[in-house]
Figure 1 (cartoon, rainbow, N blue to C red):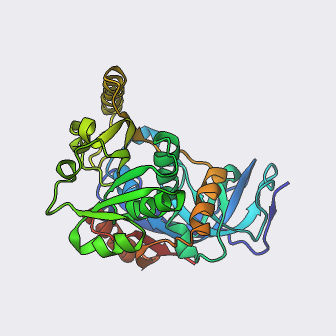
Figure 2: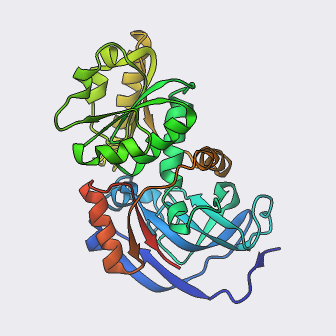
Length: 347
């Protein structure tokens, strides 16, 4: 039996797109979106804040084949809010009134809405010391970094970690989480952001505008290189001098839409597979292109590490829940100049 908070509205506001293109051309505001039916292990979250991430506009521009997406797509994979209804098979991890944070699936209706339906398995409790805006900024970046370092990178306490793009939305979390786990951290960013990255805990900062980090470190210095700036094959070409043979190079999905058709998806997969094979045959560093998995329990584990280290989210800007304001957030994300995360305040 579904249980819900009293006086839920029949409809709510949401941002939507139905065709591929630039955010300014395809995004619209629907002020009367019907609330979804709450079934199975789903819970309904009243969204207080949601983040804008590069993955949102990549999908909008055709980052995956359109047939894989809902016919009406609400963007946004990061949310924080309050549980207001619980499906008949939910209630094991959260109850009505719980304050939560969620990393949504790419292939469901997203978080730039007043209410969002999510599977209970994706939900994590929000730390009390974080605001909803702070909590909404963290799920995707935190899970990406945790999986990059722990799952793909095989992190061990004391490892030396290079983080490229250390001042961005994912990079700032990477610096904080790597330090909280006990790493020696070298961050790569512009000189204008160097002090911020040092303040986050980086032991060294390299200004990419004046120094080629692959020329500065040539003695297999790193256990993990995490490329959060999606700069391409810069580090792959120098892996044997930059990374220990037992180490790992981990990249997030690049800026270009490399998976916008089935052919491109197969091609991208073949490129990753070939580099993995080369790494294995040459007994060199591992190569990993990370596709972030969704898991509420793992998200809670990673957030607990940050919370214990008193590592608070870094937010560049908070935007209103209006179409012009959200489009401004997308413009900032596309520019690649955000220092930290971009968040939309909804309730």
